[in-house]
Figure 1 (tube, rainbow over the protein chains, first blue to last red):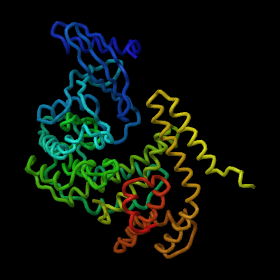
Figure 2: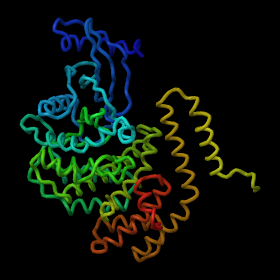
Figure 3: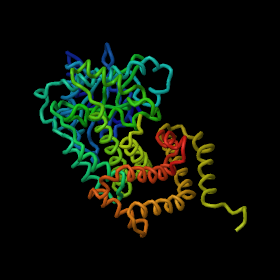
Figure 4: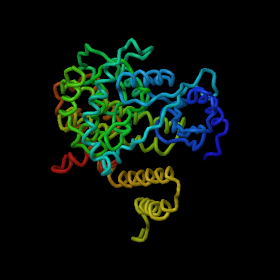
Amino acid sequence: MTEGHKPLRDLLTELLAPALSSTGERPAITQLQRLTGGAAAQTWAFVAELESESHALILRLGQDQQQFGAALSKRQEAQLITAARHHGVLAPEVVVSLPEDNPLGEGFVMRRLAGEALPQRILRDDRYARARENLTGQCADNLAAIHSIPQTRLDNIPAMDADTQLDFYRSAYLGYPLRSAAFEYAFRWLRQHRPDTRDEALVHGDFRNGNLLVDEQGISAVLDWELAHIGDPMEDLGWLCVNSWRFGRRDKPVGGFGQRDDLYRAYERASGRVVKADHVHYWEVFGTLKWGVICLYQAHVHLSGSEPSLERAAIGRRVSECEVDVLSLLRGQQP
Amino acid sequence: MTDSYPRATDLLKAVSECLQSEIVPALDDRALQFKMKIAVNVLAIVEREISRKPESNDRDKEQLETLLGEAGELSQLREKLNDKIAEGAFDGRDEELLASLQAASLRQLAIDNPNYSTYQSLTKDTRVL
């Protein structure tokens, strides 16, 4: 692995010399490997070695042509992560953004943090027992901090309220051949029950178990900022509770590790906002439908032949999970 | 056809067991092991679909005919139900509709992923199918 990808390693050396060393010492790039995960972007891990120290780093590139939803550019994402970090969010440290006109396209390098992001391990392994106790409160604190980032610090972050997003997911859904009676009902219900949102904020857009880097004490970083937008802050709370992100721990609605009331009260204390359960419920219904439409999209990308893969085909069979979840939410059967 | 004739579900089982007990242990690559796990899951879906789909379709058809108050082909009934829901034709009959939709989705989930938490929880005490 270390020997391969010479053009990429040379480029990283050039890029990182001024960012890591005041004398412009050129770092050697070692242990370069592509990581799995992050469907909407390429992620690489590597080490930049200087004479006296070495830096464990991550390169994120946005080259996927099949992005779903209005994802931020890597340039915007880097700006946003930096703003979030300055605002007390546990966000990664961006070391450098890739300059314009480089052969890799848009991207940035950030510091690699220790921790686990695989939800099943976080929810199961003994070493994360303490972390699991802390996670709900830490989610509340980080969400409150994200939702308080002044919008004046954010350029060109798209505004997406419930209606805008319903339009987007409805038209995507109608583009696939399969229709679902459960989803038809959910779309109609969501149109009819739109919440009255007066205090819009920066919304992370994908804050869930799976996008949290966790160590023995809890969250060490909030990852994957590319779906951030201006919208209803309750959207983030609802998405965090979607059953798909509980990974089998249905009785712990908050990410498979916590209870709703604990999240809501901790968030109220940290943010000064009032949380109404039915407002979060709306976004949980929305999030469950959204994940269902994403499953349909993945299956469609496979079946249309544009990007066939076993994973995408299999995800198409997760639609019935979303149907049952959305219906049980609407019938008041979801814990 | 004798008892020694392997049916489609027997073939799927044989492939699945071979993959799990012989191929997976021979793989060093974790990404390939993960893919093989998905492949084994997919074979199990196909196996359940072969054994459950005919009855599941019959139940779907009955339910749709009750909901819509008319007889017809399954695919046409499904299409009609989707259109009617979108038009709001079931407003006021929400609980009846939701119960029926949930029973149908649970039948599909029984094929796709019967280990799913919501499936386990909703089918634990009563036969909702």
